[in-house]
Image 1 (cartoon, helix red, strand yellow):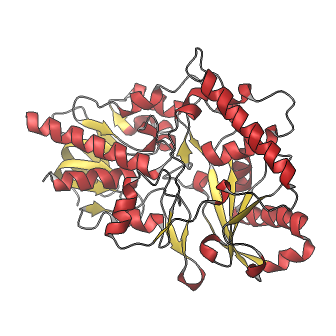
Image 2 (cartoon, helix red, strand yellow):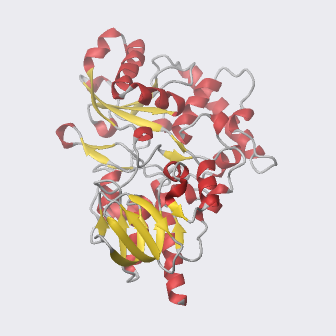
Image 3 (cartoon, one colour):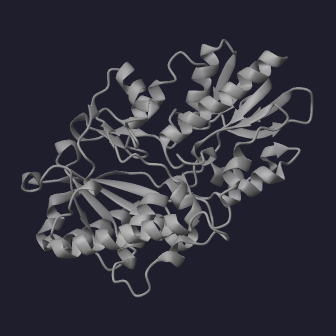
Amino acid sequence: MANSEFETVVIGGGAAGIAAARRLHEAGVRSLIVEARPRLGGRAWTVSGPERSALDLGCGWLHSADRNPWVAVAEEQGRTIDRTPPPWRRRSLPNGFPEGGQREFIEAQEQLFARISERAQKEPDVPAASLLAPGCRWNNLINAVATYISGAELEHVSARDFDNYDDTGVNWRVVEGYGTTIAACAANLAVALDCPVLQIDHSGKRLNIKTARGVIAADQAIVTIPTAVMAENEALFAPVLADKVEAARGLPLGLADKLFLSLANAEEFESDSRVFGTIDRTATATYHFRPFGRPQIEAYFGGGLAAELEAAGASAFFDFAVSELTRLFGGAFAKRVEPIHIHRWGSDPFARGSYSYARPGMVECRKTLATAVDERLFFAGEACSPADFSTAHGGWMTGVAAAQQVIATRTRR
């Protein structure tokens, strides 16, 4: 691959990059996906669990599934779509959370979302936390749920951006893995793995993309690098694209990590049921029991809690989960669970987080990030989406849109 030439180089082999390269391939544009990791999928990653179960360490839900293009891709591949309603659409287990309290919490959360929607388009943009009801007993738990949604606590998140997210409420899963589906979508595409991009030199007539395996010359490039990586690497573009770096800094990646646990004697729990670790703290995890009916627990950690546990090491997630679960189900419960897999996305050098949110006042950064430069540099990824950010289908849509821009530019030449 060293010192090779292509019409278009797609930088990043996640959902956006694969969607872009697939569209270019369909249009007959000679392109190459350049991916830093030894695998495709980016922040979508399926690994094998017990009894060959597929565990999605990254994105796992086909959000807005009734309009999500990855559903059709999964069906083309012969995957199994599970349409079981997600656990957050159901009542939580009563352990530590009586049903009356659950009703109060849901009502308080819905009232907050209504206040955010009412305030969102007014000036100035404000932190979503400013719209929490003063003194509400459910504020900490509402903030915990916000870390699962945005990867960050509400004080860090733009109310306008939070409200801009467009969700149809239909959520499905792929039994064989969302990450598996996304990576397999790159079949028949030209790919260079283990190939970190060091710099994109756009000073000359053609682009010179400097990688760990040599220089690639190209007419155009579609950049799908996560914002957190772009924000910490001002020298990625030569000459420097200061507006892109600043836009990336306005769209940090929130943090959400999953820990998969095996569960002995799982039959006492209903499939796809859920419980919060505690209801009076923001620093708590949520536990999804028996996903797909498997004898497992999928524990979900977000925001500052996830960052704190990442800093302490992978074992800290298991210790924290056991402490919460034994408080709910008794000390003997510790003997029923064992860790299976976790991936620390904030510590991943090619991600530095899970999915984007906009800081207060930074909503326009999504548009700035997505804007092409000189009809040669194009941008895609979930952070570029104004309404489907934080999702793999947002990555798909922006990837296809960037590819369409490339195709239109080449047609005019």
